[in-house]
Length: 141
Image (cartoon, rainbow, N blue to C red; front, side, top):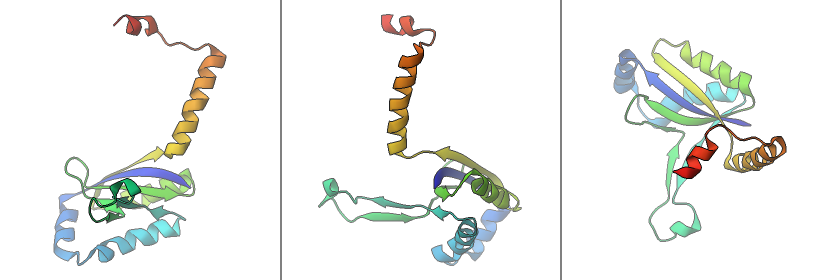
C-alpha cells in the first residue's frame, strides 16, 4: 500500500448541507469509505496515548478516519491506496462533486522507509562525491 495525506476543502453550500443533514459519524463516513474500498484502499484510524510510556497518563484516544482542522482546509486524513492510479482516481471522483472546492493528495512514505531513504542518501552522496553550493558558507556561521 502507498500512503497519501489528503487535504480537502468544501464550498459554503456543502457546509450548509453537512450542518443540516449529517446525523452521525458513520452516516457521514459510509459513502467515502465505500468509494475508497471500491478502489482497494482504506482510511487511517489515529490512536493516541497507546504506547507503554503513556501508561497511567489517561484514557487512550482514537480519531476515526478524519480530522476537521482550523484553517485553510476542512478535512485532513491519511489514505492508503494500492497505487498512484487508484489514489488519483479517488481524487478525481471527489473533485468531480460540486460541494468540493479543493482536494489535494500528497504522497508519503512510512518512517521506516524514510530511515532507509536517509541511509541511501548518505551512500549516494558518498559514491557521487556530492556537495551542494554554499557548504563552506554554512560552516563559517
